[in-house]
Length: 295
Image (cartoon, helix red, strand yellow):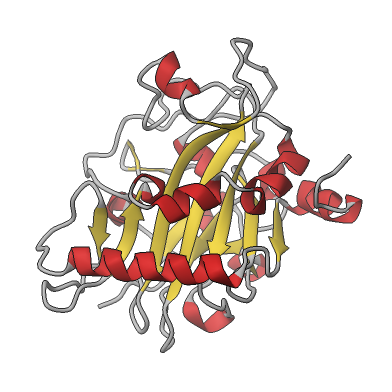
């Protein structure tokens, strides 16, 4: 029996690789998360460079803090950790990929009003291939999401196709040249909805987002997870340090020692990029870009 999704919603996700569930998270939790963002912003005040907790916008200054990503926010915020483990997030995921779920990673992406950096087209699967593709990301929409403030966009159905080339000049660059790969951005669908909604996108679906040129911020927390019987393939970044660390990521259900092997396309994300840092830094090595870069 499904917990929250209808058959039509499940079928839509299976066909298109994405889903929007409006007004999924209560207002009280949303208020608490916005308070946490205020706290993170104060943490960034006085910083001169990114660290292992906060990734700064190129336009950041110590007196005018701008964050483009809070890294692993569930380890820095009890509010976010508790939400991640709640039925608000996990119930629809269980309907899609089963009762045993393991965490891949979390991130809080923040696009400042009038600036927020673009993220080039990519597939999450290119960064972390597994033995099966019951892999997805849940995005909590913190600000009302419209076409003006840089929403996440997906190319429907691409989760059923190949792994696109994410390499540039012989290194993994974490970005795709859509034209070279035969894709048309005119087919992209923006994932929009009011604050408190969630998006779900398949790990293999191509997605990206443009600059935020509006007068409103655009902030999303991503919870990336997979079925517990999906085991990492060589080259995944970062690779689990041990079985104990891997099993400590269980969100619900039970772990297993029996990987489920499915015939899925894989392109190893190696050699590692010469540039270190977040996806924003890695993608700077990309030649042709799909989205405008802030000058």
